[in-house]
Length: 305
Image 1 (cartoon, helix red, strand yellow):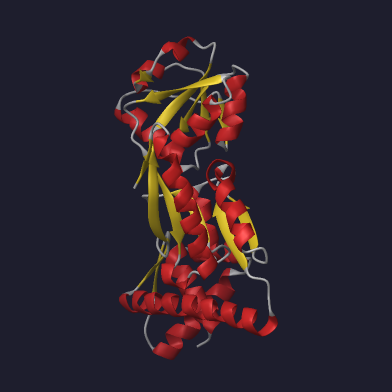
Image 2 (cartoon, rainbow, N blue to C red):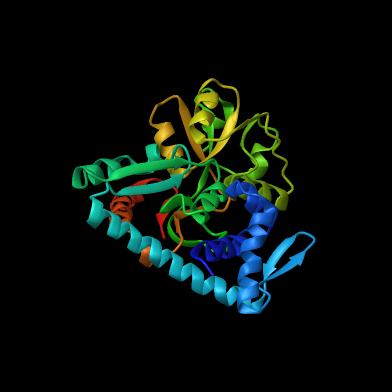
């Protein structure tokens, strides 16, 4: 039994599919299976049940996976500390999040963090969906993810920070700009600029529209809200954006943000593997972000958890 055997078992249990895991790790499926087979042979029990759509852990597999995950995270945390102590390695804090999150939520925290920790490398991995952030965290390529919360996956934990209402972003010349609030039925038939289907925001908007019998068919699809703002300013259509983005965009004077009253709020916050195994600098960055979020409480539609 090796640490790599345990890492593969944990990843297989969380992925639920050996072929997709092999692609993620850039290995062959047979090499993944060999790690599982070695563990099963040594322990004398079956760890994974194979099905047409993938794999699920047996009771023994789940027990070993849970213990292995706790141990592997602790070992990784310890190795980081030893490398820093012995070799003076530069510490790195890696955060995965959406492409516009740094601009709208993290600018102040980044500046204060770098002033306090000039030798720590702060690295951001952009991801165009919460699902992709989870994949990056699950493969231990990042310490933290700032994501849309509420739909956790195996092996990932969440801490919700705040919730945001959703607003319709329109050009100042748009006839809808005269409204102070709207319902979904009021915007059926707009020139909808829609988010990519892989995003949690898209799923929430689509589900709410279906429940109310409203069709929102996007004429243009984009991956980030900053791009949506550009299209709205060019009067190419209207977009649905969360509260903080809406507030920041409206400050330009070129667009107006109108609350969509019957769209449920979207929760945002931190995703991670094990809170207690995060490095101290990760906890410090989370606290700095918390300070900035508390200052945002005056933004319409933004509410701390």
